[in-house]
Image 1 (spheres, rainbow, N blue to C red):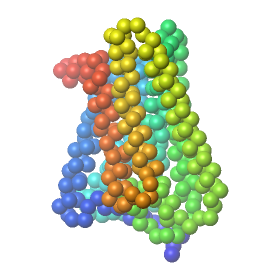
Image 2: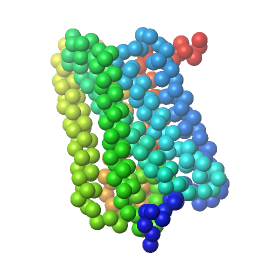
Image 3: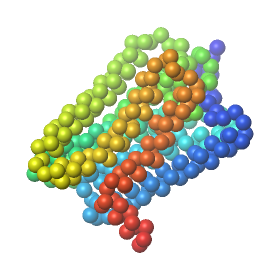
Image 4: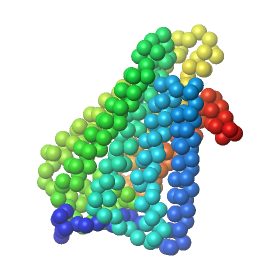
Length: 305
C-alpha cells in the first residue's frame, strides 16, 4: 500500500514482451509519427503561405492540423523511448503533464470540429451571410474560444485526477497516462466530486454533439432543396471531409471509453488506444487533402517551387 505522496513514477504498459517486437514497434511508431508530422506540417505550411487559402474553412483546418500534431507528439515520443530503451517508467510530473496535454489537444480537436461544422452550416444554409457571420475577427474568436475551452477542460480533469489519493500501486495498464488508468489506482471515497466532473464533461460533449447533429440535419435539408444534381453534389462534397474526420474521431473515442466491460482485455484496450490516439492525426490531413482541389493545388505548387 502506498499513497500518492510516496509515488515518484508510474509504470506504463509495454507494447511488446520481446526485444525484437519492441524494436519493431519503435520503427512503426517512428514511421507513423513522421507521416503525421509531414502531412500536418504540409497543410499548415500550405495554408499559411497560400494567400488564396486564407478563408475560414482553411483557417480552421490549420488549427485542426496543429491539434493533431500536438496530440501525437504528446504520447508517441515517450512510447518510442520506452520501446527503444526497454523501459516503462514515467515520472509523476511527466505523467501529469502528458495527461494534461493529451486531453488539451483531444478536446481542442473536438471543439474545432464543432466550429468547422458551423462553418459548413453557414456556407450552405446561409451563403449570403457567410462573409458577415464568419469574418476574420469572428473566426479568430471562435478558434480562441475552442483552444481556451480545451485548456480549461484539460486543467479541470488533470487537477481533479491527480488530487485523488493513490494507494493501489503505480502500474498503469496503458502505454500513456490516461484518466481511467489513474482512477483505477485511486482509493478515494469522494464520489460526489468525481461524479460532478463527469457530469460537466458529459454535458459539454453532449452539447457539441447535439449541435453537430442539428447542423447537419439543416445542411442535408438545404442540399436536398438545390434543384440541380450537380449543385447538390458540389454542396455535399464540401461536407464529406469534415464528416469523415468527425466520424473517425467520434467512433474511435466512443468505442475506447464506452465499450462494454465484458469485451475489455489488455490487448484490446491497447489496440483501441493506439487507434484513437495515433491513427486520426495521420489520416485527417489525408482525408482533407484528397477531397480538396484547392489544397492539393497549393501543396503541389509548394512542393514543386
